[in-house]
Image 1 (cartoon, rainbow, N blue to C red):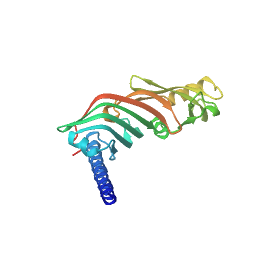
Image 2 (image 1 turned 90 degrees about the vertical axis):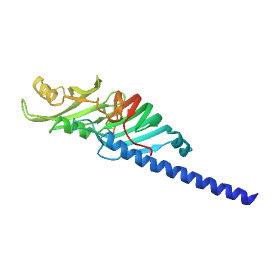
Image 3 (image 1 turned 135 degrees about the horizontal axis):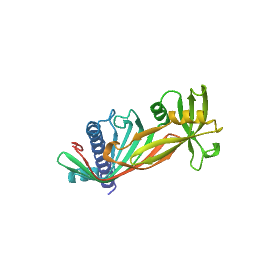
Length: 231
């Protein structure tokens, strides 16, 4: 009986190794397929959750699939997502198409990316609550204006979501500033960034500020990807 127990334990370990090995291979293949279909510069990491994987593969239906990417372009805006993490549920392969019943995702746009989009002389950064920000923090800005005289001023700028567009506007200067300086700063720190072309067909639900950057909460349902994944 002891020998039988050892044999069964070894077989279980081998089965687990084969199952996880199959999941790893499938994840790499899916990542390559998604990189091509979503036009990504890098292969995303794909992890198929659940055990056993081989049973899911035989049914061509996967309960949960996680996708993580970095440096993901936002359409032709010139701005990239520093990171995006997508949780796909109810994933099914039918022919060359992969579908998902629903998805939730979180993405981050770095402040350096937004600063570059605004142009030279503008630097954005997270202003935590204890440093003068509102609850949850605010978006601080340092901007070099050239009129009415050349100088560098500091303040905050508003961040909001409007019809799938990230809007940065409403500069407030720390020292108030005269009307000319404020008008020049507001002109320089104004951005409309379309978010309708986030990969993986997820849509932005909400935006918030974190130390890492502007955080996007996204979701989607009844998703379709024309990829040959999970072969």
